[in-house]
Picture 1 (cartoon, rainbow, N blue to C red):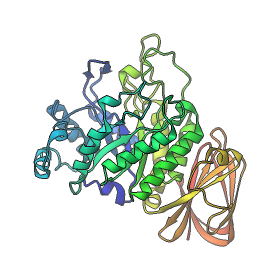
Picture 2 (cartoon, rainbow, N blue to C red; picture 1 turned 120 degrees about the horizontal axis):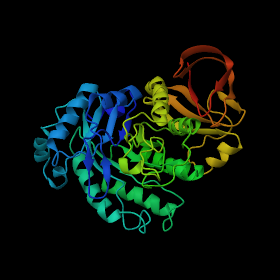
Picture 3 (cartoon, one colour; picture 1 turned 180 degrees about the vertical axis):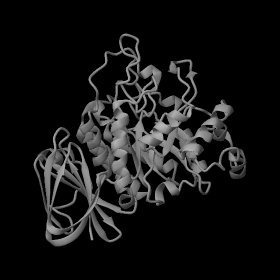
Picture 4 (cartoon, rainbow, N blue to C red; picture 1 turned 60 degrees about the horizontal axis):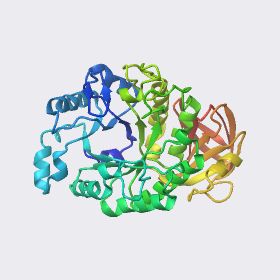
Length: 430
């Protein structure tokens, strides 16, 4: 699979972090007691709507048999995959790398090389709590550059987010961190990061982070990919289980405002919940802690939320993947306050043919140029209730509304929408 197909086609990448592996225990913790290298788990991911696995803890250098079985299953079920091959880290010379990859690069499912997750520097993130020395940005940036230099090959790196809760760093440190990565990887092909807004419920930090990533991606003419949070309570073994979070309205809001901000790739964490992050205070597996697929192999509440949201993506991605993101139009005090630091806010109360938006409890409108046409991604900002949103145009137009429920053609100077909690509709003016 040429990485270009992930960016230039009509289908949006919908990826999962922690794909299926065989039962495995490392020195630090029990990862899984289940063997996920079975048809039913790959079928679950396909049924959920995923089309890409961006990380699977199975290295070709260490587990060639399980690695090739994973490739065969991805091929069978039509799932793209970024693979791990540690030998490539120290290998030099384009032809040597190409020769090494021949064992798996002829698979249609092969999408690229997973280089590293969250590389760090001495100044970011908080040196008191991160493992930066084990994942140095300087080292892994060099590896990503080497791989990206090869035509048709993508070296996938996912960057840290910015949280206000980090003790020893500032947003200026974060910006320096991201820009350093871009300097070390000048042949950037995608910009990926993970910010889990429901860990802190700090919406301003969430938008500030995404706005900066969006701007850097635009400067480098590459897409940006963001993560959606599938539960929480990870890395807290034995912690008393909390009520399910994010709830469904929060989950849909998270995904829809991310699309409204111009993301061209959605990623889920965790896809399969690690065993060690799924144990409650009684020592039992809690399938309502995190993951699309729980540590006991069952579908979690977030599995069905993701399935619903992926149907929305499938309905709108042809437009969004072929449109230029212009900016956002926040409506209502809450949305305006949350997005105060966003750089791409559209001036005034409208955009092109759109004169005004009236929303019962706020809205966020993503504004796009779709092959010369106006496209509006309208999000209900209320995460708990269905709300009415009215769009007023400068005159009567033909327009199409697109969402998971279907496509409809309309004519008029006003568009009235009733959107469920956190839901959205795409509108294209003809």
